[in-house]
Length: 466
Image 1 (cartoon, rainbow, N blue to C red):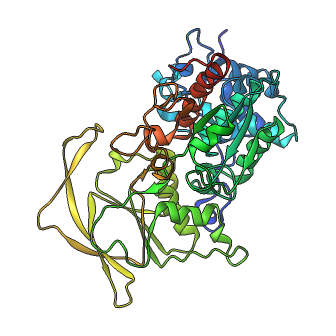
Image 2 (cartoon, rainbow, N blue to C red):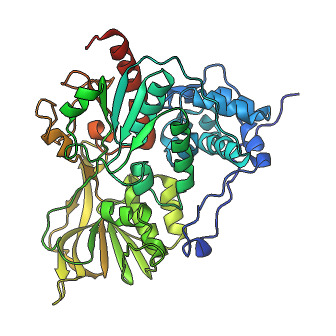
Image 3 (cartoon, one colour):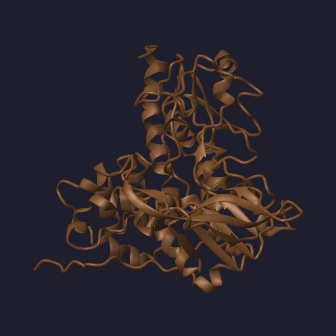
């Protein structure tokens, strides 16, 4: 008799919304062993697992879930780590609903298997047992690689190349490694201890990390090539974007980069225990509706805002943020002001923002993104009173490295031009992640890192370039 398949996913417990907006602890609490097995049993182990093709790093999803069904959690983690070295991170922040889970066979009739939640479970189980991963290293090749940036692309490249026997040194501009994983994503969505554990695993296999090294200032790429056999640029997209409308320089208007970096990296939410203050008023408006915007608006509530608003020029359907993050924001009391767009910021006599002039929008034909284009409604302007504004409309490439490496080709947006394996216009220099694609997801950056690691290894062993 065939076993009965559960049609709906097993719910993951979360903190109560009213309680969680008063702390920075992780919102999603993770599966218990019992719940993980119950969810894993929903996987039908189909012969042609489309979920694997939907994963940018091609985790053997069928294989690791089978191990969970057998209660072999160490085995499940071993399967994941063949292609993904950051399971505790990816299980929390990857948009599985648009990737592996979107093409899950179960999802054709019922709810897809909660692949991300199961990945997180096995990563957390290992940590809970106090165990360290056993990573096999190939013999030393004597080759050295410089990795610029310690975000998801850089960490992935470093791990892959260290395992292949190459000496890897990561250069990080900030005083803590982790890149966007540390400075961009709040503690309540990705606890820093999870990132720190993955970085300790890297150090354990011989990866060296040099902090406070701003490449382009302290050293140039050409200077790195004097000491290293190859260079990987995982610079991210760290330059904030603004709308270039009147009043953007008023006091109380932050870029999302500054706002979240102060909170996440410098722990402003623990002031005065940590000496980086950040002040929000009673009414906060966040411009944008991506994941960064959700992180910023939810953070503002935890900093004491009485009202937190998302200002977005399209409708809810077009929001680029993960559905889970939108729902979490709604549960926490975030107010969504849709189909409106800022055209000017108004200040008081002290130069502090006091209002936004908004214009109402309507949706026209789809644009290049496939979303319907917002069109201003003439004569619909009105004032919206605020105390604090956070602009979260995207990030751009920081030109520091590219401006000091003139033979490194970039596109019109300032992103580094690279082929599918990360090879740039400069011999020996590879690039991947957001500095190539523009701001994207953690898992896509990791996928780029894996591909670059293959190409770097081949280059180091053969000397062949393109």
